[in-house]
Length: 273
Image (cartoon, rainbow, N blue to C red; front, side, top):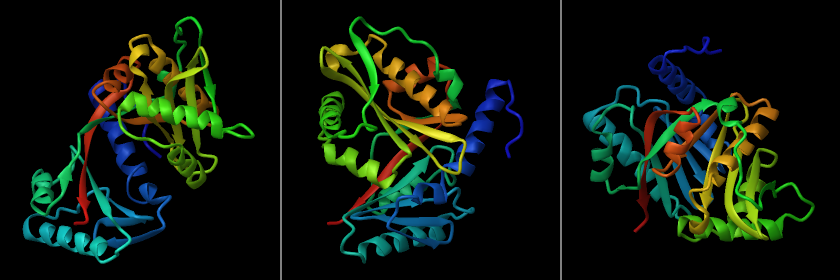
């Protein structure tokens, strides 16, 4: 059990970062893996055609020893022809500081960094006024959720600008049955904002993911209201903390609501061929 939460902001960020490292890394990131094995500090999971590497820390490995671990990890996934890519997810506070350069030297490609935001769910669960005619609704808990999930997937694609099929929603719901909620904001029969709540079993956390508003409805507080609704649902489930890997757009919104930036995260991707 973690000690009582400090009131000083700097100490609080350290407290939350410790909770993040101890509860949301290693085996927690392997919950939906089809297979998992270990190599030193690494947890190496396979998720159908992709892989994911997790660890709490690298145990002080540096230099050639770390290079050898990276090379073995590539060989581990490359030897399985079903695996087309895998992710080595780094965090900004991880050691050694030259890990990103070593991953790039081994052929990994970095994706955009995001900010890890953490805080108590009650900070987000505030009343946020909505524009006239906008309503919030959970859509995954219906007898036949597919029509609404299809509309939500189309809105998420418009919000983020890259393909997102309804099969992605269905697959997530099947893999984490009872742990995921999908919420939408609607206006005049149109889905204008979407977002997921993902409860992390065995921890004090739930994550808020995939929050995006279609371009013509941005700047009206809809994302913030949908986040507050997800936080209220998390509290009803007994969740204490919320976490989010946030883009430059959602980071300031969550920080204004009381979450703290505690570190950054950058995916490094190895792709076959």
